Length: 595
Image (cartoon, rainbow, N blue to C red; front, side):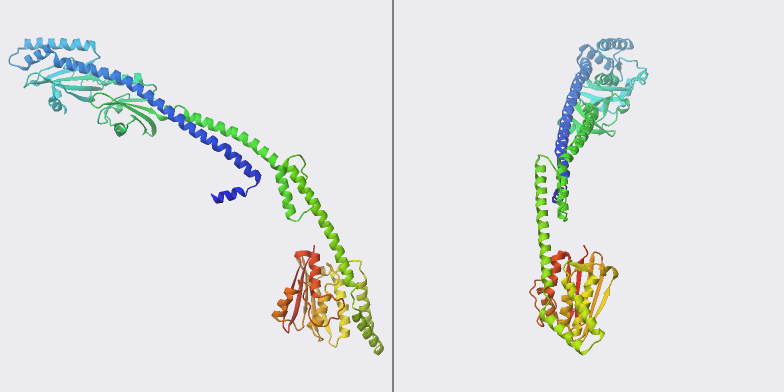
């Protein structure tokens, strides 16, 4: 989080404004969208559950009425005295003739016919233990004695007379109905004829009667209604292929306190709603596609989201335009401040207006004008100061030096009338001419080298041992401009302090490297130890270094004055390095900016 905050703060003001605006608009929009979508979906889900529960409630009334009719017939057969009397007479095969049995069959058939005329069609079987039976369907379609082979017939015989065994759904035993009505739903009861004799009443209805009710109550063709027994076996459904199969979500029905849940059926989510019936632990179940349950909420949500993105894109374009418009002066002012930071004091923002940024920019421009005026004033003052200093230095030719030199020349001329003296006089005159000319503060490097050469020539005239000056200048370096008389004090310092009245060589080389003019002055004098070199490096920059020895010099300028002067002219880009080894000599290297 801290890293993200740092990256955010590192962005420009314009970018931060745009990102902040986007977050402030998008975040509430998305939160509102998802919350409203969730609440809407939840409300639609509740409505769908209520609708399914109402459907199952009405369906329960219809199906229960159907089963109530079956139970009514069962009870009628159970408690009808005339039927029971006939069944008791039929129980004794020996005491009844064929005529009597025919009359008994006709009587019971009339009772059964009277019942079935008033109720939906179903099949009735009264099966006696002695092999007699009575039906309301042709026995050539099905032999009722086959019921003795059923797995459930023994369970019925163990029931009390008031209990009912719900057999459930099975394949039809009526041959001519197998194509149209392949399944029957059957119940059975134990009919006590005497204490030792039992009979069974078996009543069956067509499963189609129930599934047709499902089709009537189905709100759409994708809704699935089912009748399921306590073991999870499907007893009735619109899809006949599912009958007698196991229902996959019986556990949800058993454990669900709310009577509904969302289940995945054939890779689709369905809203499962169940309603228990009052018979045998059976349940009515409704499966409605969840996507359809909540209506077109997802489509509406996507459409809403697309519309939001569309209007957000328009808003974003307008926002970016306005932010760029409003922050343009700030960006321009920021660029100006960077230019100023890089040293360009001539740049100005030029922003006009009455806003806060315009007032700030105007004040900033005014400040730059004042700073530039102050710098120009300082430059003029420094230039005048350097010129005055140069004039002062140039005027500081030591009279004692000039007197001794002229005396030497006079004696030399008196003793020898050769060309060497003429050369000495020429060197002195050239040197004096350079000091007298004060028009230019800067001269070419080769001219500065000529001054040094004349100075060494004059110094060799005064000394017993000669100092050899070796010049090595690159052609392009010799045409670079340098301050007047900045090499002479270094040469003078080498001759007086380095050689200590002895001879030696001074190598002067110059070359250009990138934007620097590099000048090296290396003598073969006595050099310095590390302690003295360290003290020199620390003190000559402050101007406090004053080496002991002969104070008689041509200009009276020391090494520290040379460094201070060059530093004042070129600033921090100028460098001067000193390296010295005891008894091996000293080297000065100047790194002078070309611009």
